[in-house]
Length: 104
Image (cartoon, rainbow, N blue to C red; front, top):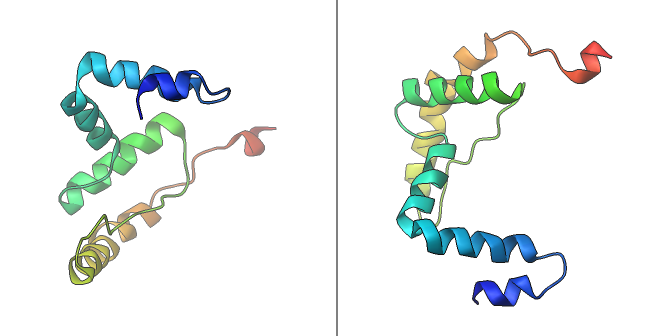
């Protein structure tokens, strides 16, 4: 489907606009941008990325996705175990971020 399909559907105009952006900057640039938003890498890189995201949006939780597409289960399980061993304990040591509810 092209961007015109979405632009003509009420409530889906955003997707048509995003198609224009993809066409303007290219699929590779969009893929790079998407990758930059994800948490991946060595345990230290993952920890630093989560801390960076936390400093920007003030989240007190993290939902990790350890399996993508047709990744073998063993690989996803190994990633999960490594994260649980190397990253999670450090995240648990971080103090809670003050939330709007806490301030109100």
